[in-house]
Length: 244
Image (cartoon, rainbow, N blue to C red):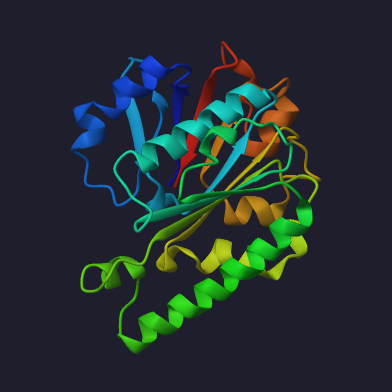
């Protein structure tokens, strides 16, 4: 069953500090907590990325999408070190919005399509390697493995503007989306093009958890959520979050 929440971005440093220091964020039992924003009643709203596993982010405003992605990165790293989580960020728009993370040891930035395809292949190989590790230890997930052994870090691959890639035809991408959860390898993809040619049936099937910012029309909204909702949002920094 799906739930839809209306939220507001953490648009400034004070907002981020407030949510990261809140009891809701500090005292949760999430394996990989990330802050998404604030609720309609101004309450901090965070989720467990390890449970979501895949996330589709759609919005016309590059600024708002980048603000959200930065919030996810900063909050995930606020209580995790490089032995616990690693980020790979494909900034295909070359927005420079993530350059501040250049010197962070557990974040790698890439900028072209070929590098994305190579990274997907590398992550698929890493998934297979982790699956072999689980089989050898008779375990079902890396989360279980980490309770008994030296921690294997979660990996989050963010593809910022995936519309120029033929992900539907990429076996590594599909396999990671379908089977990466137990191996702690997670995918976040974004686009500013809410059309059926970009957000295909394959994408929607593998990315049931979705964030959509204010769109221009009912048609665009239905492409993402199968109903007319996001065009009714009041401002560009508001968004809807659908989770399953």
